[in-house]
Length: 174
Image (tube, rainbow, N blue to C red; front, side):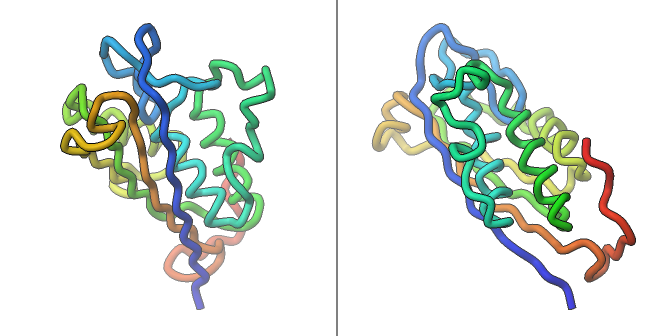
């Protein structure tokens, strides 16, 4: 019998002039970016929280507190790799990622494939197992007013050695 676990992640950051807009590890040209202790990649943060949550390992703040100077301006894909390595060490693999970025502007559809590819590479997944959607807030609330961005993610894990992907050993940590 297969053992599956599901985790839900969410993140929000203010928009600020003079900061890069990084989503899923891809820098998107924009006159503003996301404000935060790290690179403030709301998409990577939401997926990281979903991975950690599915494995009952807490949240991103527990592993990478914003009070720790070593994480200042850190690439958020470091956090995502960390979460992936932890679930692999527990004997799980990431099966699927479905995420949504909520941002009024800029339009992101031209960056969808690059973001999916970067996330798939980071998580050692086939790109067809990573879905990224883009929505606006229809000018409602802080996101709709162009003051912030949000992301939501859901991740499915499967216990290694069960179900259709039986393996004798966990893949190497990368």
